[in-house]
Length: 187
Ligand code: URA
Image (cartoon, rainbow, N blue to C red; front, side, top):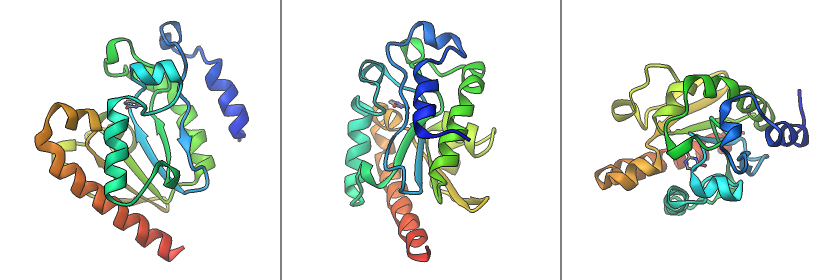
């Protein structure tokens, strides 16, 4: 088991895949490490790569709006990505890059001990929930596994590309807030 400081050190010096050659800064997860709530997205984009902070670009702005609609802030959760370094031109992270990076997510998860996990987008849902996850059909549904509730919703960038998904993502965030309230009440 590693501490947060050790994990930061590993990620900052990581060369486990070729993304280390093109990244500016690796992007470690951020947020409330005591919250027991973990949001998992895909990979850093251009702004995140410059600042070393998850979700600071346009997707992050929409993420914050969605949180505020359900009376939440980033301080209510821990937010991280499957892959910690930006894939060039924001392409999907390759299977081999995800494989190389997944141990970091496993250690983050061991430290956060989440009671609720929310996957943002297809890549995270396929990696975390099940390999044949269909985001369009299955978003917003819940499964219970190893003491933890899991769900997925659209990636905010998918909603920025297709505004017709907005109603669905808002409903999913309402369901997420409800589940978090239930889980916290039972704690
Ligand atoms: N998109 C992601 O999936 N993660 C980020 O941190 C930023 C954009």
